[in-house]
Image 1 (cartoon, rainbow, N blue to C red):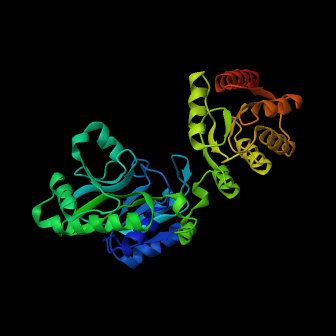
Image 2: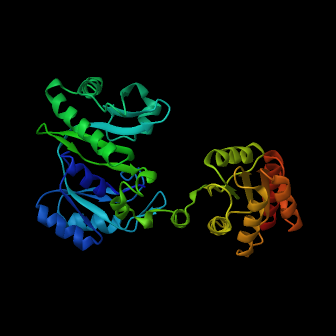
Image 3: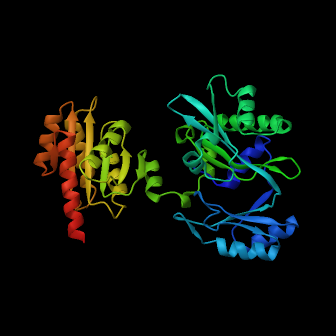
Length: 384
């Protein structure tokens, strides 16, 4: 789950990380009032779950309240990478001496939490990694031991931070790590983390992404930070139905039980010239309610020309899976072609049930992928 900059900054404040004062406005008049109360130059910043706000014109320096009002007028309603701006953060302007990047991610390859820093702050870290990767300094924090002082200092020295400012940087880095672990984040970054002209550390921006699996029990209150207007409606419906769903750009809908099998299914579609329209994991088995919910969600995407079921019957028997699919399909009125690959326990009996219902079934993933790609391509030609 992503949250807005102002929400991430509120969390950083709880960990005594210095951030600018700022308030959220939803109208130009509110932005003007906030700027008047500051009594100094401000920055008006679009609040959307998208990067590159500055390049898109969504971050504007405002010398007077009148300019802040006009900038808010221009930014509100703006579309930034598919997200419409409904609110802006009006924050006091800072005198920047030097910009840095500081971020934390979960590194699954090394099974550690990676803390990254760079002297190239204010630039998207992906761009830095592409152009000057040597300027990204990394240290790995052990999940059990945490981040040590010496590791934070190693980061600071690698980033070229003046020795007189290292202790302050170490404090911020360790508090950022604590915020990351205590909130079960996937990503937490400050870009830029600046030194002001007065020599003080200040977080000018903040990005935070929560690990969804930690929210249901450990962080229920964090659910209130979710902005449904920033999320795909279908992804919200899938979450309510207990499905793992991610919308993609292709035209073949996928219904699969198991995340690894879903990835293999999408790879197979690509291998035979198809493009998956989604990642969708319905979990163990294929109960009728989840099948129906999955198809309804997939069909909200007008690009979908065909649907592929790839179901492995382990403990769940193949004939029960087939009946669940038929029951689910009976609730949906659609003419979108469906291909079903069913394998595992009692799969032969399951395929027989499907064939008797005049549904296309396949024994291998190769056959199913080739069949559904051909059907989707044919449908795409017909719609032109």
